[in-house]
Image (tube, rainbow, N blue to C red; front, side, top):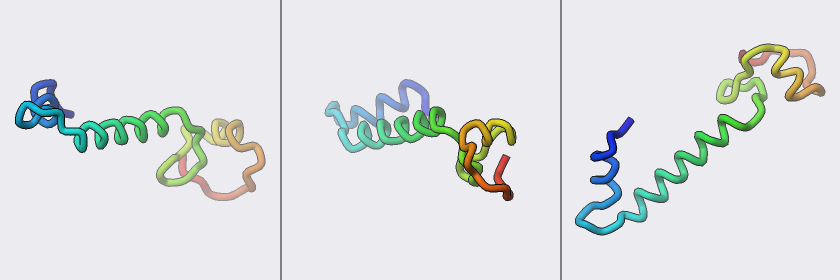
Length: 68
């Protein structure tokens, strides 16, 4: 995690706003927020906390092996 000073240095290089860095940070935040709010699907990249959570999020999933 970056400190506030490090973040300001990245965003304001040469006293000008670095739009490339700003957009990259916004994209990263967007992906992190999406991962927090989307329902788990039992994949390695989006595991469920419990079998019950997976069942409630996707009641039509067939029996099988999922990431918990």
